[in-house]
Image 1: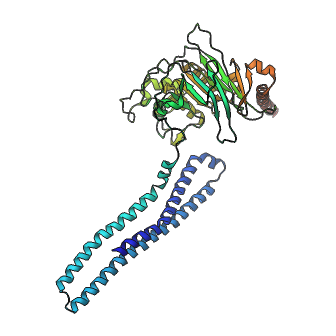
Image 2: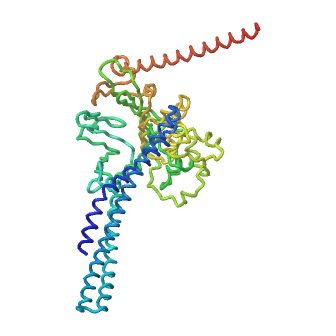
Image 3: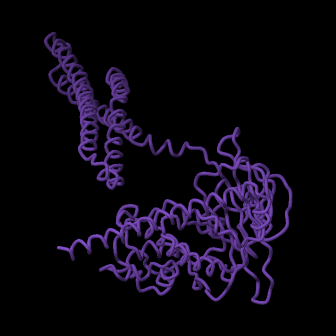
Length: 499
């Protein structure tokens, strides 16, 4: 019995590395397949189908080789354990037979011994099977357990409180941030939306509440985000838009009759626009402020983006209510709020042109939709959520100029009475801001309105002039192409007449 347990533990631990290697290569095969499917357009463009097939086949062969090793070691383990059992049984039978021949024990005692030995080996075999199964399961769960071991970067404080929205004011107090301590992106940045400044020790306040002291779930419920890289569920368009209201019941989506004033700030070569709503139609809009970051020299070639924010009170900031409907089986396209959100995002008419309408499947991560269509679905989903604070990270980057302008009008309308941070790529979206803060190396370098910064001729002015030159260059190229095309058509027509 001792020998059986010892051999079981020893050989099971020995074959663990082979099973772990087999699991790793199996995951590599799946990752290779998923990666190829998600990037099928790139593969077709560069005609690398054979290359990808070879890489996939190589991954499969490596997995098969490792799996054979794992199965081979399992066979060795089972065979060895069987030899231990049979060897022990045979040795015991020989000793009993010898004693029977000497008449030291009867044949009945021999049979009884044999029966006891068989009953003893049954739980031993169960122990071996259970131990091997546990070891295998622990190896299979290693990747999941690694996720549990990942440190949580942001945790609720010991006594968190839910975030209570009263007006939507956002305050940055001496905030510093950086992906590495050596290269901070922000250094003690302080500003208050909609007006004034206040210095403290690294705090972000929403309606006077430090976000470190509120529950993360309540904070996330108050924020709607449209990322630059939109991820959609492999379901219908209606489901992806309706996902914004699952677990909520916000009847009010937007009021397009309300007009907002603007505030802006730019970071890096990415201008940020902040829009601030007036509290009433007769109230003078509050002053705007913005932040812009650039380099000290006038060389500003590179991408730019703008971000806009609008703040105020959310009239419909009610507690989230559970939706009693069956979200899996409902007809999402029949929901008027979903259609209203889609219309605001300028995608309702496009959806209606699809044969299945709102029931059209979008594919894995929305692969069946174009980049602009995916972003409009994400915008509609966020509109439907109706959060007090909106964060749009390059939300219109994949849209053409006309569609972006139309959606910008919708964003301005739905931004009424809520704070909106919108990162875009056109500096022209912040020209109406009352105040712009230019950030250089994480610190405020310039401050003023668009006109004041242009007169100063600093970083912001260089960025603005570079954008104008780029726009004129693009327009000039388009005009030349059109003229050449027209002359080509005329020459072709003349040749035909002469013939």
